[in-house]
Image 1 (cartoon, rainbow, N blue to C red):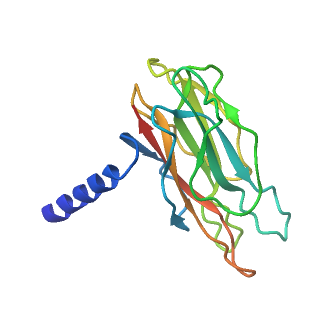
Image 2: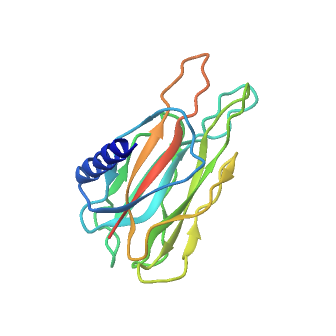
Image 3: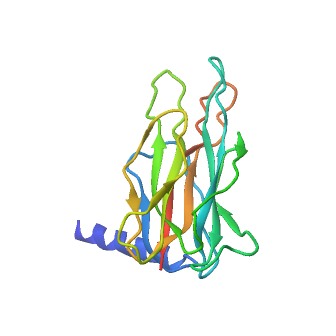
Length: 201
């Protein structure tokens, strides 16, 4: 057991050492979907953080259609003092269905994304699985003690997790998504299932 713990710790250290940013903490909800593969992590440039986001969502497909709902998450990057002048964005893997929304942004130049809540529909048995449906965030200045204010709405199906928050003085700087590939004509597509967000100082 002790040897397994050491090996696991080494694996975590090696993985974190390969990140292009100094990651203080990673955030993951306890309700993420179980299907698909994890894609490569993607990060905002050095000294930039997430200041807004866009979602790739497929609309309802009707009674005979195969719903996937949330397909992708894209972060808009900016500095602690102002938005990115070149509109730099980052996204990990995403599904092929739906279209990207416009960016939902924090209200002030010094406010960054620091918390998230993931909406996920549980297993439907013989029904139509959709897995992740939506993600919403909280914005705040890094020195604030209070939780911040919410941006975003809600998806079609499922329940939101509790709020998962970066440590004080840090903000979301990157993400990694778990996406199920296309399942073919007779399969049940779910697209995006889960996400990890990274906190940087």
